[in-house]
Length: 225
Image (cartoon, rainbow, N blue to C red; front, side):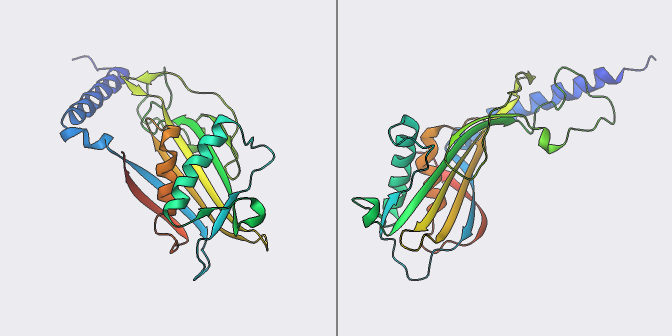
């Protein structure tokens, strides 16, 4: 009996995996997976013990245009989350207790489930590319993430998208008088779709538990409205 080439065996495995994934998706009860998102939060520092939230003002960087649609949406989302944990917007920066710097970015990264070498069949014993190969194209405003622009991998394997959306947001609290940096919060969501409309949810997740923020990393499940 003639030997089946490795390339055909690989294609069959991919077809089987694709059919299994589609069958599993079809059985999700009530599309529950689409009613919540997972958010990763990293906190550096800690809010000073017994210090009330107080009055805040946004501290914009020279690159942040106060009138741009992106900045308006970013500050509106952060303001909602800040007010929910007790902060009050100051009339001016000079009357604020704390200054808040914001950062935001959205990028596309190579899906962890995508074919690592699109357009080329995987041979037996082939090794996936290193993690830093995950191509991305990014836009953002603010500080902390080092966003740039790059290429986007286009294509897919049996319906699997080649790229995932990654969205990151940042809050940095600064004492207005001493200019001491009090606490920094970074929030990230990655999935097949991540919209700037999620910003209020990301900031809420980052500030959950305030003022008892614990330094370190935590994963939070957020319910979609």
